[in-house]
Length: 408
Image (cartoon, rainbow, N blue to C red; front, top):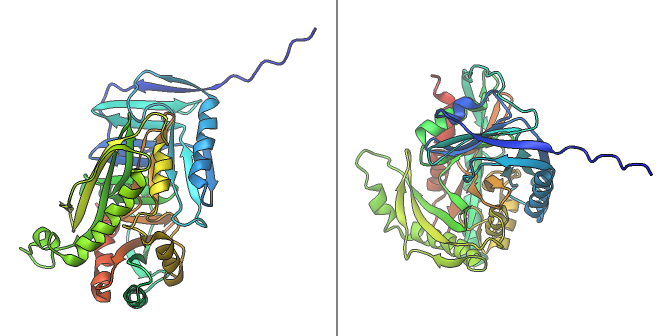
């Protein structure tokens, strides 16, 4: 009787605590290809690709979750740390529309910091790689991308006319701008500048999409669920402008915000218990503008959907799509000349237990070689002014422009 061939040994995934504090962005060894999701010095960065998946269509998130479960099942996991984000992690960036490609990456090395605890997760033979010096992009020039300012204001006028006819209540239209750098872009340079200038935002990088988002779409950690809804924006044109006070009484901005909150709460009520939705928003000041914000909380049972699956249920909220959702998505397809790609879609991380964090990919750019395509959107309602909306889009591109032009 012959013996059956031995099953192949499982690849090991080992998480260990690190003794020293870690500068997460500084830990990334290479100019391109790293992944990150961090806020105020804590979070996760990674490099190397143990496994990668792309998907399209309405089931992309479910397909990625099934793929990640299979990846984890093939690993021999040893996690001596046991904090959110330790163990095998998938960094995920979903496409905005069904025809846009979603990307998921399981890095071979992850460095994390959570509640002051620093740790590393290494899959297989992955290890610390020799780090190259961070390079500045050099001179920057700008040009129109798929939509000029005139084209954007024309699209806004078309949208307000359709809203005025009662076709829909709100639509979010995106404007883009292209930057050309003297040198090939070092993604770490952008991450470093964004993390320093916007520490309260979630600074992320997945497959060339780099940004700093102020909006947490969904966080699921040990059953606790939180979602931060942002809609309604203002900025100071002059020193001393009462931005927050004016925003809190702006009929246009309050209406826009209410649509966004309702769209999130409506979805979460079907899957989350103990849901708490504040009666009204609060102002959220950032470095260059102020948003109306509402923080929603609740509880998700262990048998409930993963953070990624909840993110997919929520997407697109009225804050980035519009309302009614299906009509707003169709108007976006008609009025925006180029696909959004992964702009304004969920971006974040997922662990083997279904926990994770997903922000909305805002204040971002797609980086490719010397080229950076910045994208920013504005919520359009019946009384939106095209010139003001164009200015708002430009203000929302300031984080990426400032990062590119820092030259330090």
